[in-house]
Length: 222
Image 1 (cartoon, rainbow, N blue to C red):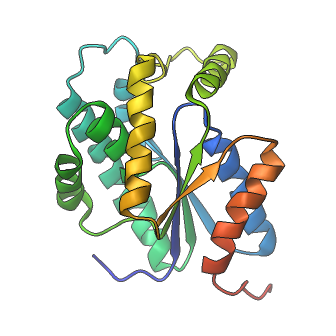
Image 2 (image 1 turned 90 degrees about the vertical axis):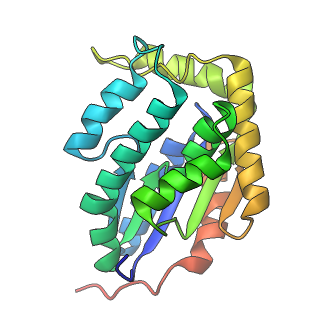
């Protein structure tokens, strides 16, 4: 892959962990400082990825096989990498992504029992060596987090339901959580577990302490 000059940060966590809220807080802070920030959402972000997202998250698709789920995730991810992530990194921007391959390691590799090696092989085929420079993984009590996700889904004003993964069993979500903990053990320099309990501002401070040392100098304002 083309050598990159920017910084790639991803946010991970179980359903309802608060990762999207924290990602948006970080994006606002970085832009306020003068950084060029490009956002990515998984699955989705691109026109093709958005169509894949509808298939993946529709609760009507309960029959979806684990391998189908994995390959659809990587199809969306590869498109986002080609359209959004790699061009932004080549321009020197900071890319902040709501999920990336660590989600597939936790959800399909651990919770769906496909195994980490299968997921990593799919990653190599689709993305080569593209991984985030830093991954922030928020940890939160599973039952509390799922209750929060349920309330979020009830408030969502959309004709399209995206609750297929939220509706999985409690044991499934516990396997996801364990998957994330295993990733952080295997890659402690890249993956940082952050306590997601408390007020959003308090959690944001914990995240900033991890990100600040990696930031390039603030660009000069024109």
